[in-house]
Amino acid sequence: MSDRILILTGPPGAGKGTQAKRLVETYGIPQLSTGDMLRAARSSGSELGERVAGIMDRGELVSDDIVVALIEEQLSQHPAGAILDGFPRTVGQVEALEAMLGKAGRRVQGVVAIEVPDETVVERIAGRRSCPNCGAIYHLVNKPPAEADVCDVCGTSPLKQRGDDTAEAAKTRVAAYHRDTAPILTHYEPQGLVRRVDGIGTVDEVFGRLSSAIDELEKAAA
Image (cartoon, rainbow, N blue to C red; front, top):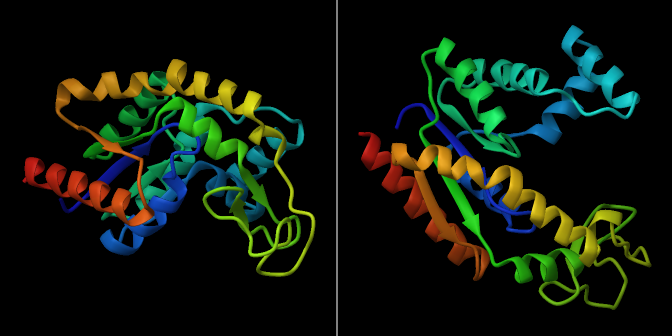
């Protein structure tokens, strides 16, 4: 698959960010995270970046057309493809993405969904803590700091829980995923482009399943 444009999806807390970084190293294509792209655009000083900055400063959501324009700009610099992380989140965004790719004679080659039971997602999210100084991430059960509530990296204490990492907020985010994002799998499944991966296990185990899924998609596209 010479032009890998892969969508990596799954509920919040499924481990997409961790796995995307390993996929970048293995397959040699960049991860395009919408959050990272928006922050980079904001600081770039470009015309598009100034539009993004104005919208974010007003506390508004950046529209789909701007996000698609950012992805288009990034993909033009990466002819070998990219892993899309955090976009598309809705079927409407899928349609906007496909229209953009179609103009360039490109298309999505596969959609890999990391699947984790809802109750596990809530446990993962609610147990997360981060260092307010260096940003190191911990989990009360799966990755606790060596000394309770003290950052292993810089020694800062106490660790913090993000406002959207409470159990109630996690349940709301999971419900939004099922309502808005999961339908993109239904969109792509008739095309044979969806691979579902069990997200339970060690990072290495889940990565092995992801790699097998992507290799399977490559064979199907050959």
